Length: 232
Image 1 (cartoon, one colour):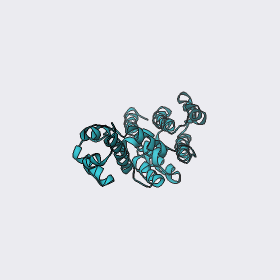
Image 2: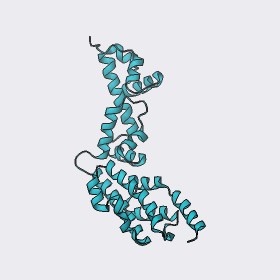
Image 3: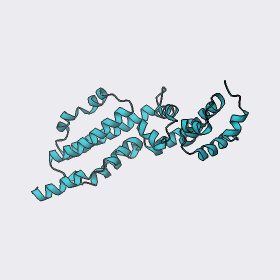
């Protein structure tokens, strides 16, 4: 391979879209994950790469993305490295292009298997962790589906679907309901002003808070506060 062609190939490798790999790990299906990974690799003509150094360059990006994802879903470093080897040793698995592709396919497939297994655990599933995250962070005015999904390591679309399936309501609705529940407590049992309560439960717009509060309670915050028994 002449220097110009090698330089062009390095430029192609640098443009591999690792975000597509991350999305595949987070929300891909077992039945088509191999085809989708192959499509990502084809974008940089991976099957035509003869250089071990360049194959290693691509492989390390995917290895690191998979390792990071595995940690997010509770797979220990020891388990991951026992399955795929440590980063310093994976060069031995990449002696030719076909071996490298099979290695990458196995990483992606096994990570998706781990994700599915983790979500089905009898204990706290990732979706339950998402709910716990909301319960602990409802006062954050930037809390959203995107923020929660990033916190638990799932794609927003997958988390949204699974959350609705498990709890019977949209994640955004759960956030709003959690905020209003805490707002009711504050309005009932503190002497805080309504705008202070709104701020404390994650609303920065007082009018929007009033609209959402009435939607969930049938009363405005002022009406609710007036009718409630105020604690001393």
